[in-house]
Image (cartoon, rainbow over all chains, first blue to last red; front, side, top):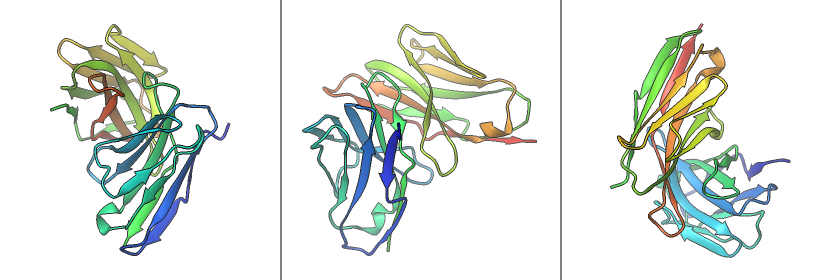
Amino acid sequence: NAGVTQTPKFQVLKTGQSMTLQCAQDMNHEYMSWYRQDPGMGLRLIHYSVGAGITDQGEVPNGYNVSRSTTEDFPLRLLSAAPSQTSVYFCASSYTDRVGQYFGPGTRLTVT
Amino acid sequence: KNQVEQSPQSLIILEGKNCTLQCNYTVSPFSNLRWYKQDTGRGPVSLTIMTFSENTKSNGRYTATLDADTKQSSLHITASQLSDSASYICVVLDRGSTLGRLYFGRGTQLTVWP
């Protein structure tokens, strides 16, 4: 199993550009989440999904969109990048919300 | 407000020594509490997960305790190794919302010196 994979590993965007961060898992997990991690702060939930076709907002959803058309994939879209979105983004998955999550390696995003 | 507080913020110990990290939470209703280890530049990795009825759970040299009455947990690391240098994150699951929420502490940064 590859586990949770994220692409790209690094990305630099200009303010106003849009892009999609990719996340895929091959463990047939129903639960998938997107987090951002900023220096001195804990991981903050952006969006999550409990199955294909079902998504919900987390703590900091503004400026981000998600969709879940398949069990395996959970892409995160930045609509119009802002410097405040400079962060490290982690995708995570789990079989249920009662077990520990598997995290991807992260995407380091810089918005200039 | 649901919160997870960890202490200390950072800790330096010598290789071979033991240490204990603390986690206090106000999340209610409580479902479970997790401890994660995050190496620099990598995603967190799950160490333990504890439910309301569990007081102690071990994973090798890591032992987590939970007191659901006082809403406190600790992570004890025995005979520390250089590879234990990492951030340790306490996470609590809230069952109050329909689909569940996870609340993350800011982590304790542990440095193990030779």
